[in-house]
Length: 411
Image 1 (cartoon, helix red, strand yellow):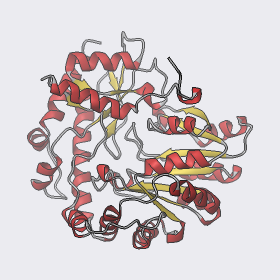
Image 2 (cartoon, rainbow, N blue to C red):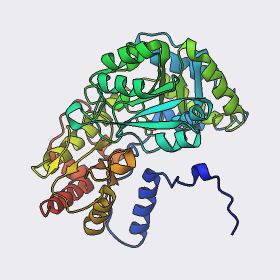
Image 3 (cartoon, rainbow, N blue to C red):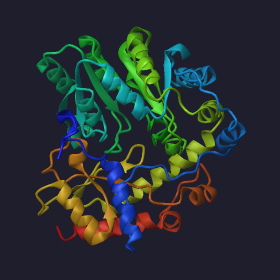
């Protein structure tokens, strides 16, 4: 049989997050009860006014500017400038069909090395491989909230021969659910060696303390901010994200524009008009409510699952927890997650999918298996949610967590 596949990408496999979703769907189709703790999708509906804006602009059929609608880029600029106290010119913003696609184009255009803290989102490394950039993993620890120290980053930078380096930081983090507490120190090291930082801020609006933090505050001159609508706005399937560039990284942005022109051409025009509404409207009550729910549900899982056999950090934002199961009889985290799925019906992702060592019994747990629309309709934004409320509106979370508790007792 003829071999049509390039050797460089033969090692790639289906994205782990999408694969677990497909596997869960198959089990459900077979009539089995599955607790979908593996897929990181917002459970909440898109705000009604944003949906109305999409409907209103459904007749907009023409291609937009490849860089994105001017109105949208100005809206994103205002959104960023209001929180960062920096000035992001709309000319330095590019809109894509999801920030994932823009990251892919960044890897295609960049010639250098990539520093990835482990754990990191599943697609960073495969995209770098496709872009022929070498990935250098930087193992982290629970003690530092699963983020690297500035000294560890500096040591890694010094060990690399290439001077063109991108450090990818994601806070709140997927898969750990923790936030980075040493951004200033990391920014100082990045500035010292003039490396580029890609700050993936897709979960920033879902920080449980509601305080915006970005490494761009300490290192604005070479920090690219990445975000979009998929998490805070519940619009993952709409596929809209953006990159905001500092002015002295404009050559990279110009290359991304060229690659965009030869790939996706432009983001869906009606979606872009809906995004204008999302970035200009007042959705503070919506975000406060959704974040309040996620905080309560995450804390419920943390409080009930944590034990002398299950270690994890307190969730600080986003959708995730990263439990470590001690005294395990398994050789790999993948084997362990397979056993959990088969015996409990709970779908988790193994830590090895996120760059962690396979013999560490770590897994990503997404606490979004509930009907977010019904939950939203029945709570007040400022009211602290008790366990009875969670049991009423997130029964799968409660039952799935108990399944994990029972399973872990046999370790």
